[in-house]
Image 1 (cartoon, helix red, strand yellow):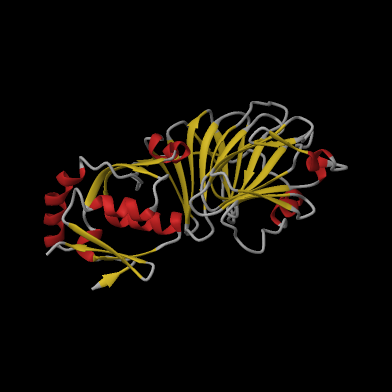
Image 2 (cartoon, rainbow, N blue to C red; image 1 turned 180 degrees about the horizontal axis):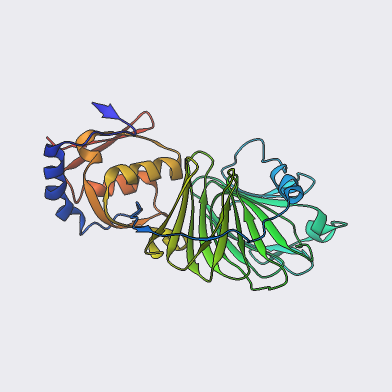
Length: 330
């Protein structure tokens, strides 16, 4: 029987897991799942939150009508530049003027009041981009993501809006907190490195702190602001929050074009590929329960990644009518 998401465990499958796990230790294919260890959160009830007015300004910036295969750089007047390069570097100087891969973009310098307007960068499936803001803060965007931001930050604060996933290295500025807003979270920092996962189609929103500290405020009724420490993961799902101690390398390796995994079920790999590449994958229950370890290369196409699994496990792979099928070898 074929399925796409949910699988049932059985005693027989658990035995198969142990049998096939060793086969995956030598895998050279690439992408990852997650391992969580419960940790106790620290709560700061007195921390300040951002204004509702700013949130309305940022969140009401419309997304593009349709997704492109190219990276989109969208200006305040909704005109845009399509960027075909996969690893695109967009950078602003302190005056809001921008370059794309070191090429100056004249349009931004013509804006009458750049800190009262907002730009967008949108990445499609399978594409990455980096973005340097006017204060020197750097942001790396994963596939299927959108960032809304002003060309020049306001004198009193720095705010952006994120959908999707991004890794951010914030330039310290004690007078101007840096605030990342998502649909369900406000994250406030002064200077730190952290990763945010906030895809609209996924039930969980996740913050992983690499260095420094961040204050995370869920946008749910009576929620407290939570202070994270390095190597901690914050997760909000179904209005429930958890804090866990993690190996942060597993959550930021996508920035270098890889995804690391350790003894994870293949189902997590298939779900990630489905979301990342936007492909349809169907697989047998026994295949979904196999575990794997390795590093998956996000620069490879999905077909090559899936076909690579057949070299280290008793799996057959085929593609028919745009659907990727995986089954046990007879």
